[in-house]
Image (cartoon, rainbow, N blue to C red; front, side, top):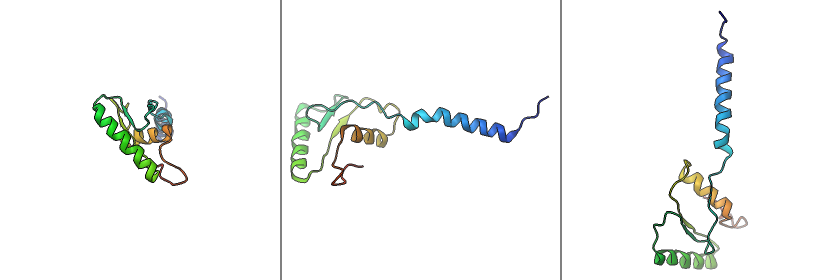
Length: 106
């Protein structure tokens, strides 16, 4: 009978967990492209047309006056990601905010 080396077994298990976890560490959620209006994307289809127009107008005016950008996005699923990770992926992919003003983070 072969003797089991506990330390080696622990390392193999740890290595297996790391290998299986890497795709979730490095993979970004599938983020849709922004619409031509940029400030609103209603993939879940929950916003009325007037609400979308209000968001677009208010956000455009805010950006013009303060350089701050507010974007409203609705989706049917976060694809298993946390809301924070999903929002950060949108921020990065869409280029929301201004790096020089340091307003491009959550």
